[in-house]
Image (cartoon, rainbow, N blue to C red):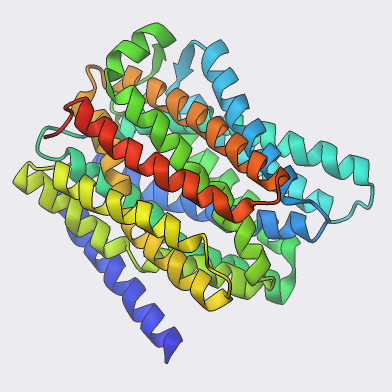
Length: 401
């Protein structure tokens, strides 16, 4: 019965996403979204169980936090030293890098050397961070170049809901494959799908890239292009360390089985996907962003306080379900703020990626500090405060009123 309800809800979400997508007359945007669904499925399939896999290899929460910091730092370094973007090559190479990460994970299954494990672990972190820049900056430039004044939130919503939708199917698929066949099949499947995705990117038509070929940028010009939204992007990056790092590593304490761990994240994403799409489309129609940021933001801060005291799998699951619901409603608006403030979308996307990763370094470092102090749970109180500051900054900067 539960499985039937899950399938029914997932199909309803896919139908809702399809209805919104078909309202866009531009076939290029639809093709781009389908490509995003394919590559995201591969990435989430391979990534969902990565911390669970390494925890069974003996890695600790502190090492996971360092992994996250290294990944974010390598993204920042790539943004500093690479000054020219080749859209076709970068998107293809980004998928090749991520395919290599999952191939490395598969190799780790057959090694027993602790030293070799740690070297490859941090090598994976470095490559993962580089792929943040190499893939996401050009992809986001192309994606958000389709937006106009009356569709910014909707484009952001489709972008976010695509990830949420795939985040419903891919984690449970990863859990099923690992449970029945082993981790190697999960990582190898993800790698093969990403190799196919790289081929799609490299052979796509020029119009699929909105005419973008190569672009040069400087960080100084990029920061000017993003305007005052750079401050919101920084706080958004800090907060993003919760779903990217904190929740996965704590969930391991409650769900150690591959199937239950993967299913947990599928159910969490299912709760909020349709609501997110509805809110962002209404925001574009009404032209009002502030209330759609204030209410979910306040509820998210409250959710972080409540989850601090979750002590059983049931309470933890319900708390994360509630946090995910409001977080995924708020999520598209963080990108919409960038689009509303951007003077130049390509340069703004570069600045956005830079500020997000600086924020993730800060968030990861704070989480690491709490882990070393044996107070991991109480770090949620820090993020509750940061979320309130994030809302106040949006108000103070008069981005919306």
